[in-house]
Image (cartoon, rainbow, N blue to C red; front, side, top):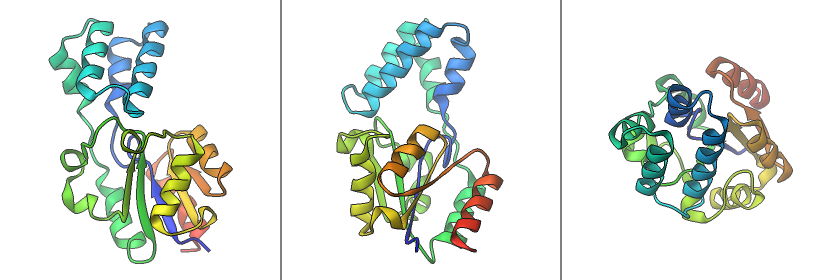
Length: 190
């Protein structure tokens, strides 16, 4: 029986500026794309701060710091998904957000009302683990007070879903809101 639903943040709950930036400025530069993904990993694990990340991306891409920040900071919440969480899931399940993140922008991105829907918020830079490391999934289940096999992880990256499955969690790869809600409703017998 499932007791908890865990959501990824970027590309699930909110849009993600990093792929947009890469598509706009580095679509044909695979070496720079790889460098940016390494910077993202350093940011998410807490080895560099967000300002350093922005500076390095700006330098690497030869894009102004202001433009880099404008695109990277454009993370729009999915209003329909938050409404589904509030009306369908919140009354019956423990909820968590588990994100590879390099800072805590949640108040600015989703606001306090949406943030309060989650019983636990686990951000990689704070805990020192990043998805798909098993420790971050186990920590999330522990913080929720449930066993991993009582959790469903929702993530847009299949490798992160696979990381959750390796701990005993069930996982659904997020492709579209309709697909995810259908898959989750079916799994939960809603």
